[in-house]
Image 1 (spheres, rainbow, N blue to C red):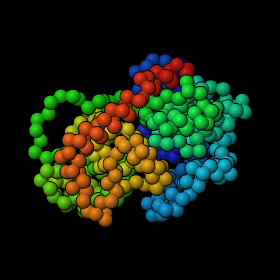
Image 2 (spheres, rainbow, N blue to C red; image 1 turned 120 degrees about the vertical axis):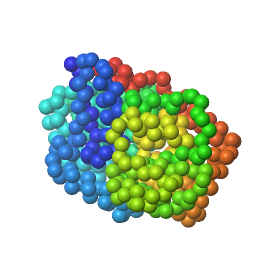
Image 3 (cartoon, helix red, strand yellow; image 1 turned 90 degrees about the vertical axis):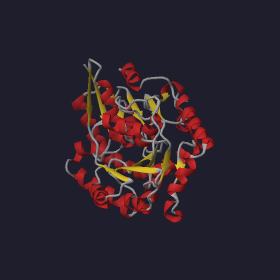
Image 4 (tube, helix red, strand yellow; image 1 turned 135 degrees about the vertical axis):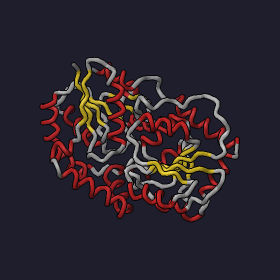
Length: 365
C-alpha cells in the first residue's frame, strides 16, 4: 500500500482543498493507494486554526487594501524574514507529521508546506517525492521550488518562471488545476433554441464578493435569465427568495459534483470571481467568463494573469457604468467576439501537456 499525503493549509473551503479533493477522487479507483489530507495548521495548533480562519476572512472583506498590501509584500516581493516566521511555527510540526504518517509521496496544494518541505529535503530530513500543485495562475515566492520533484502548473508563464528558477523542463507539467473526475467536458450535442440566455453567477463556495450589490445591478431583461450560486451565503439565498424575481433564480450550496456538472452544462456564460478552481472548471467546460469582482491578494493577481492570456472578460466596471447586461448582450450578439474568445480557450487547452495528473503521481511512487 502506497500512502499519499496531501497538505493544504487552513480549513477554509478554498481551492487548496478542492484541488486535493479532486486528486483524491481520481485515486479512489486505483488499488494499492491510500490518500490522506491534513491541514497543517489544525494538526499543529488545534482550535486556534478556526479563530485564525475567521479572522482571515473578516480581514479580507473589511480591510481589503491592507491585506493586498501585506500579501504582495510577503509573497510577491519575497520578504524572506516574514516568511521565516511561518517556518518557525510549523517546521517541527511538519517533521512530526511526516514521522507519524510515513508517506511515500507528499502533494502540496499550498505554498507554506511546500516551502518547509523544500527546506527539509535540502537538509536531508525527508527523501520521498514532493509535488507542488499550484492552485492559482501565478507562482509567488512563498512556494518551495528548487527541491520539489514535480510541478503542476496552469500557464506557460508559470512554466517559464520555474525555468528561470533553475527547475528542469522535465519536472514541469502544464496540466492545469486538477478537477474532479465527475466534471466532464461539455457534451457536444444539438441544443433546442432557448428563449433566454442562461447566465450563471458565482461568488465561490463561500458566496463572497460584492454579490448583494451585483444583484441590485441586474435589471430585468427578457433575453437574460440569471442563476445565482449562493454557496454557503445563506443570507444571499434568503434575500433572493424574498425578492421573488422571475429573472433571478437562487441556487443554494451544492455538495454534489455531478449536480454541479449539470449546472455548468446548462450555462451559456458565467459571471464570477477569478478563483483558480472555478476558472479552470469553466475553461474545461468552455463557458465564457466575465469577471465582476476579485478579492485582494491571489484573485487580484489571477485576474491580471487571465487578462494577459485573454481568457476572461473584464466586467469590473459594473458599479460605475451600470452596463453589465449590455456587456453580455454585446458579446453574445457578436460572432467575431465569440469566435475569438473560443479560439483563446482552444489555444489554452492545446498548450496543456497531454498527461494525467494522477498517473504522473503514481509514477513518482
